[in-house]
Image 1 (tube, rainbow, N blue to C red):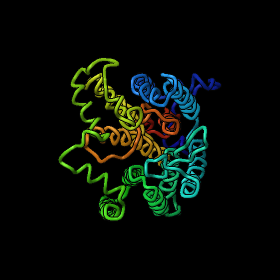
Image 2: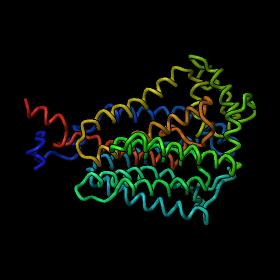
Image 3: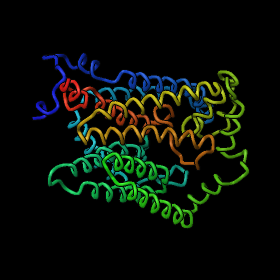
Image 4: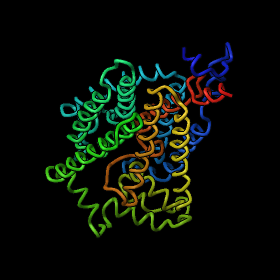
Length: 387
């Protein structure tokens, strides 16, 4: 029935998996992702060496770990990108259940590593941040619920997705992790809008979110401290924001030179949350604009390909994954230039971190899988058939 309605794109019988994958993958998006990983390794060589020396480790200890985790993330990404939408959905559901259970366990066995927020599970030799793995799984499950609402006599999927979002946002806010909570809520709102939600309903939800932020400001010292620091007219030069702002100003258009930056010696999170400050200081605005362009390629290319997709689940899930990737990058860079309050959020596929890099690999693998060219179900098939 689908073939009669929408037509088909020729399929090469017996085509091996790898040639088929290469023919159907979005190579522009794949190239941009690989370039981002390369930029992350380049910046890691500059930003992580001072941290290794402070901790009494080999100079390139963190660079080697970044290469290991990054290589693992790329392998996971490529493997997942070979899956079909149904396989991606199964993987997303399984991953979501596992990450959700880990989030529930954080108040009991989690740790804050002295940062004031219980976000990690520590295993001694390594630590995991469950919220990083929760995001791609959540997007898949929420898209599945919303897509089910489009079916005849289907369940109230939009309501289910809203209730699930509310539960997750509350759990993340209790850590507290308002950055990830805001990201989850924003991704859900975009998917809900794409799925056909009326704008007045989203406006009401935005109002409730603002009320929640006001409540958090008055009840959470952690949240209030970050908001007050953001709204302050003066920047304490001894804070991370102060160091980052000064580094960006010093970098100018072309930077102070490779290896000549000083912010990496004074900024504790130079290799993670404020990696963009290192890029701006040593390589200048030129590299920062290149990084922004690479993120734009991933997001815009993905959304353009998803616009032609006829399957509701694929369209919604792909949109959510692309938006999550782009908004996380925007938040990270926005914090560094003081456009947004401090969030403690990494720059996807560029910042150092095992959980962040591998979770980004999973999310991007799903996005690449959902944006691959498929043999049927696209609007172009209808147009070509009418001609």
